[in-house]
Length: 413
Ligand SMILES: Cc1ncc(COP(=O)(O)O)c(C=O)c1O
Image 1 (cartoon, rainbow, N blue to C red):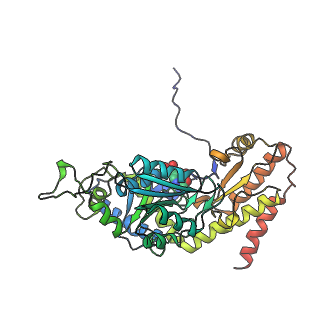
Image 2: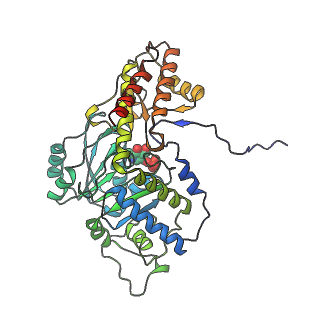
Image 3: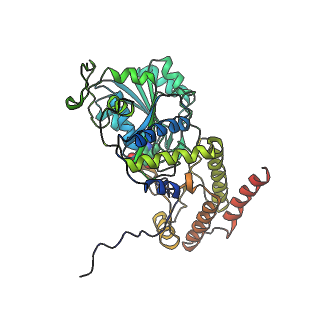
């Protein structure tokens, strides 16, 4: 009888969407290293390495810099469920799908959620956020840094100071920006922040790096409870309401990542290896070199798309460097173009959500995939797929324009 379950052998793809992307082969290699027990001194040393590497990645001196197992939203949920006590006021400025996600998670934590919204494709001026903080007096402001649904990045440099002035904590979702653009946790006075591996960090989805400061520690310590079966002698629980998730309980994760190594979950060994390698690779390149590489790819890609006669989406002054939104031209079936890219060229690009569904494509140039060859190949393939569907793209103009951007950058070095 034929075996219905063939050996796994996925067709090679170039993942140029908003994430996940192709993992760096060094990360995949790290994941194939032998497993260790979670209290093996070799393994706990790797855990400490991860804490130190992530501090540099996040540009922070926060001691509490660790991994939450799960995709990026596991990091979001760990921060929000631990920080928000039922009835707390939370403000979420929404400029895309992922702002709505933060508001939804905050509601599930029984917060009293207030939102402000701006049109998708725009970001908020800091004064508008301060005005909302003044009106709603939240205990926590939760905001997305780069919202991949719209490809916009909210400037954050002033938001931390606004939150401190009004005695609120600031949580940031940096899933799509960490490693691709500046995320200065300490100088921007961000209290808690989380990310994922599958975007600019060149890893697979499944591990969420987070960091938080002493203001957060003080808040969550009031809610500290430890499972009865592992409580140290003389343990006195906090007098605040118990955190509603065991898995995402920050004080218990802190105990696990502290020298006490108080047992919690079984750390996802191979994902920890992956996260360590992801951080190591970015830091080895250097943060500013890495950010410049993303900026250059964005400049080349946008030059190519424009030369092809396409229009870019959103406020270009606040565009993320690692994802580009491009309007689907009138009369072109956007899904047919995406299908052609995937089936004829093996290239994946993204569509979007909500009001942008069917209106824009999203092209990612992230991490390991953020390279000249990929930008050029993607432009050439898109141009061919569009011409096949009757869109009059001038042959070769896109690749020439992108190449010119790279050549100018090479000459100026
Ligand atoms: C800004 C942002 N936040 C959160 C998420 C959710 O991440 P995950 O799918 O890894 O849980 C994504 C995923 O695309 C994202 O782009």
